[in-house]
Length: 141
Ligand code: UDP
Ligand code: MG
Image 1 (tube, protein in one colour):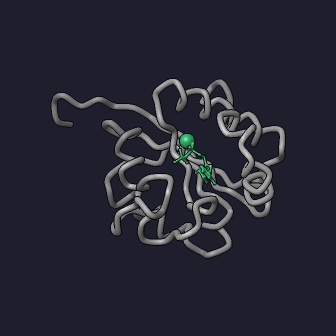
Image 2 (spheres, rainbow, N blue to C red):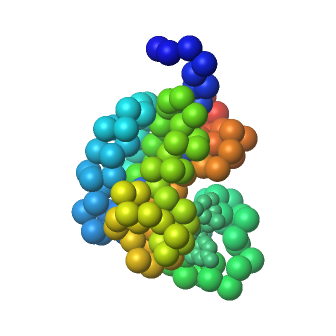
């Protein structure tokens, strides 16, 4: 391990489009090849309650009902991913929210052209990551 490493963990979730489009393996492979460590993984189907908690920051947006329908339409895969600066690192690997801004080479840039169906979620802060890990993997994760 190099010095000056800032080891963090983050919550990553492959969205229903990853499942439907059979891109789960491709996306998981990119995370592994980058060198980040997947320390927990589970497939689940979300319900409206957990989704409202997870997406409380967009729950009052006009597009939320569509997101809700989409996110409950097929299984998701939740993961805990660890590594140096992994919160920012995973967001870089994912690319920005809007596919129009996501560069080729990023997951969203390569595979998404619908804003609501952008394949992958990643926590955006240390506190957010811990909250999301607890939400989906429990207090002792
Ligand atoms: N979203 C959308 N339209 C918007 C903003 C967000 O459909 O104008 C969806 C999009 O799928 C995004 C999710 O809501 O991934 C959560 O939004 P957030 O701002 O947290 O983006 P992220 O952290 O996923 O990049
Ligand atoms: Mg977000």
